[in-house]
Image (cartoon, rainbow, N blue to C red; front, side):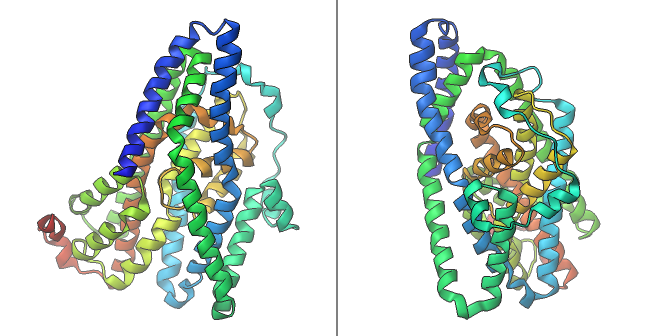
Length: 424
């Protein structure tokens, strides 16, 4: 109920921001509206919210990745299953963001909406490093300096190494592991607290945006939103259902009929973690996956399989870069693919975290984080869509791996009667 209320509040804030911004646009030439309201109060409220998001980037990524990597370290005990699971999730994430880049490069959602008033010169992107330099520089010579400077690729690699070390040492560092798990709970709670103020931040940011640009920005926002949705659909049908058909040799339509309840729950909650119970119940009772396989792959997927988020990051990166008239070269695309793919391992399955991950990706290639102001108002809707994609990927991976490991009951899958439906 609370998440639904927050969604409604954000949508209302976006609507009233659009209306007020359009009104203020007609009076923006007056000193009072320009200096006091738009660049005063609205800039203050929106700036505080943006800074709050940026504040959580480093602690969220570092702590979440350490915890996630420590858990992934147990994969060694599960042998082939663990390797297949991680390979599947990371591969589909890389495919997802590649689809996003390709589609966004065709639709050009940000073309024609140049924010000249935001001093483009301040955000010039220098010459990109070579691919080999990018690979070399992801290993930090000073992790503390990387944390202080927010060098996300180096932070990600260091966090993964720390997590693996904790896993290998096991009981010898049990207190350290418990400390990171408690820190992870704390960081996620801070994210939830910040998101409580999202309606205020959205209202201020959207109002300022349209007070400056007028309703001309609506066309570009529509292109951005449709590009993300279309990329999600492509990934859903071509990548997921295609893998289910080719690798799993299963009927995708039967899968969809039985899995639709989970998609509905994921869409309404916008949280992969909140959907875990119904996902587990569905893949075990209706899809025929053994409990041993699903109890490992589903929770792991809620942690590291964030394909929908990766798609949003890819399209949003192109969108915001085009708005600021910042060209992206091959080096930038490689950096974003690597950053978003690795960051997906640490993206918590709770609403709102995708924007923080986007902030990290934009910072990594020198695109101003302030551009998030344009998309934050509609992100809640897209968050619901991409969460549905994420949980579908978890189930597809689980089903395929169970099939290859001989832990799949084909009779249960072929049975048209859903136990979940009977219970509901």
